[in-house]
Length: 112
Image 1 (cartoon, helix red, strand yellow):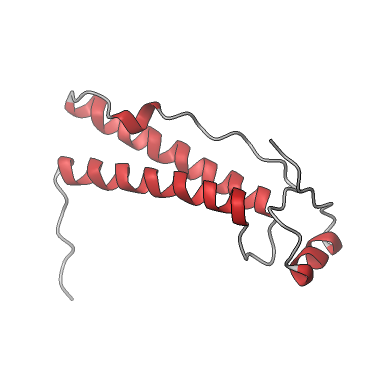
Image 2 (cartoon, one colour; image 1 turned 90 degrees about the horizontal axis):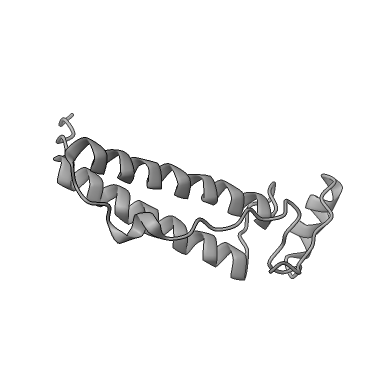
C-alpha cells in the first residue's frame, strides 16, 4: 500500500479553506431543502455542520498563526446561527417526519 503524501502547509490550509466553504454551502442547502437523515431533524444536522464550520475556522486561523500568514477572507464569514433542534425545512418527507415525532421531536418549519 502506498503511503499518503504529506501535504505542505500551503496545501493543508487550502484544503481547510475548501472544506470550510463546502460546510457553509452544506448548511445553507440543509436549511433550504432539508436532509434525508432518518434519525435527525434538519436542525440537528445544521447544528452538526455548524460545529464543522467552527472547526475549520479554527484550523485555518491556527495555520495562519503558526506560519505568520494573514487571515484569508473565509475566516471572517459570520458563523451560521444555531438552529432549533426541531427545525425541518419541509414536512414533505412524511415517513421521516413521523419517525422524528415518535422520537419526541415536534417539527417546526418557521425559523428566520
